[in-house]
Image (cartoon, one colour):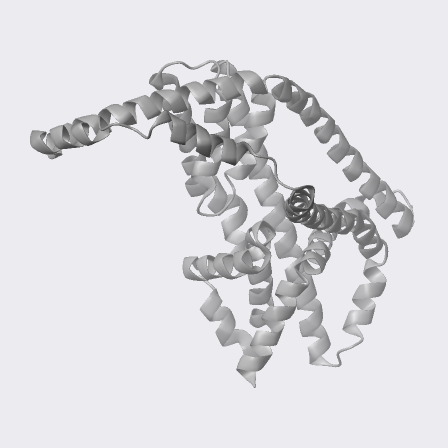
Length: 369
């Protein structure tokens, strides 16, 4: 029964991933904005109005950041032909070097007599021209209209189906994202009511445990997300300044992308280096600039991961590396990229529950560091 229950839970999480990701994102966002709401309420504003003010300021900040990124993206799109040409030149050069290496290896490994035999086979007379022209005319002969119509329909159907499926998935994501501001606002404005209703479900000592668990999860989610955000800002500023010094185009866009991609667990290093190297393609013709850019950004990543991350984030989570790895695998498998982002706060929240519930404390120790 336990195995069946676990299977049902995982199936529900996988089937309803858009719903659960949207709900959890809204909950974490409301925990992050809660101190701002309390600060605005000091001006004798009701919680509903204070929540509206804080959510409006957050949306305005998000809009301004998107507007700044949009100007950079427009310039990048206009310069795409130069990037495409540079990438084509690199691919052509690599292909030529690969062909040269393949030819050298072929001459080294294949005996000369076998090479001569292959050359003789290739020099054998080809098919008579008259027969070749006959095959060409047969291939170019028009098909009956009925067959052409059937073939066109067969070719169009998969394309339309694929396009519709992609648009439908994109529409579902946009629809769920549009609910996040409203959910966050209602969670903030009804926070006191929700907390009282939640605690009313428990009695005696269990109510104290439930209240402590609620506060623990809120504080942990707030500290984790704010710590990651501050670390991402520091990495973004450092990377953008370095790319500006190196005269890399679109440093204002590439810096934040590289800085926040650096926070992705385990694969943050290559993800943070790749955008900077791609942006440097039109201005770097030699290997040295790429080595300098890659080495410096990798140094920023390792410095932040080993020095700043434990102080800003790691001291709040208290999860051992094995649990973090398994959590990333499980939630990444269930929810994809969103699961990789939410895996650690979800697992840390489960640990808070285990630490506060007497019967589950051994599991909390198993998850902890």
